[in-house]
Length: 515
Image (cartoon, rainbow, N blue to C red; front, side, top):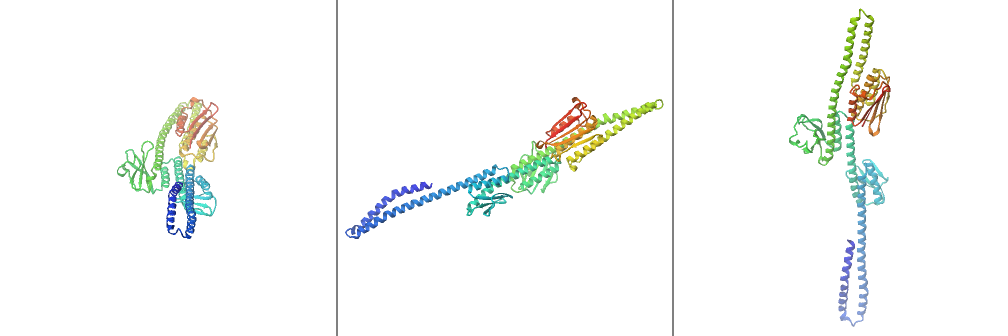
């Protein structure tokens, strides 16, 4: 654009200057006609033509030189603007490609030093990068941090603009890191807590912290379609069930504002199970991520409900098992002892030796049934995993069970496994059933219990005894829930279950579960 202007002005000078000079010469000559016979006329002509030509040439050249200089200044300014624009673009690109704030700060500092040609220092949210210096420091707008130029005479105006651009890029990284941290905390909470109320309380606290909300709550649908407040914090909501009508209409289908600052989002993994309510400012901009968090809460609710149903089924199965064992074990043994005592009563007078033998059988059977009842009662005794922790509960239970059953137990336990409560409970049930089966069917003298972490794959539990063992077809229906029920529990957690045994070579029961 500048070169085009210079060329246009030069062309204009080419057209105007020759006729203008010719006009001036003609006017000058006409003005001298009355004095043409005087001697001074010659000197006037020499002076005029000797000065006008050089002055006009100098003025034209000076004018062209100024235009060229302005053009050079404009090009340098354009190059500087392009350099600054490229630097801002690289800053955004490096920030977007970074996985976390620390990496983003270091990469942005490196880009700024390459683009500006001098050292810089950055600090954002306590993360520092760049050179240590005492230069011009410009704070980032909307962030806790600054950009510092390690140069003698930096352009403050440009640094303020650059700090605004860098701050915007790093603010996006901070927001993304906060979102990822919230997702990680939500995921950890889902794994670590089995109690629904405590789980919802933890999730609500994380959602409130992320959104900067004043209050939050979870309302669940009952069988009649009423919204029932389950966990509510700092919200003015009815304490009784209510229909999703009035300002709540549509909350089961999509996000709606029940009040100007109160957002209701459906809890809907597949079918709606309730509503997540968040109260705060600026929630309209956070709806997409809040909807995703609501889906995580919905999954937690559905998993907890499914877990409760599974526990109810397990309780019913356990009652059925206890009834079957009483019928097949204790009841038959009592009937056997009653028959033996009837026999003793009939033969006591005429065959004392046979009567004593029958009494001994009754005593042996009674002692065996007492041991079996004690073992069953011990197996039914609830274990407080939360009180002792998973590993200590495994240790206490295995040692106490071995003492009750009359065999030695060898424990090979790690320092920690980091499983979720649901996976811990599944492995503990497998341990209980495996030890019960060993005591009831294998009659071992030694049992080894090995628990080992598997990195990202979870953990493995192996219970191995030196008892009688069995052939594969005999595995169906062994003690407790039976091997089929144990396998179903493990596989429901996405794990793997196996049993290996041979007659006379003992039995190995193993399970792997994810975190």
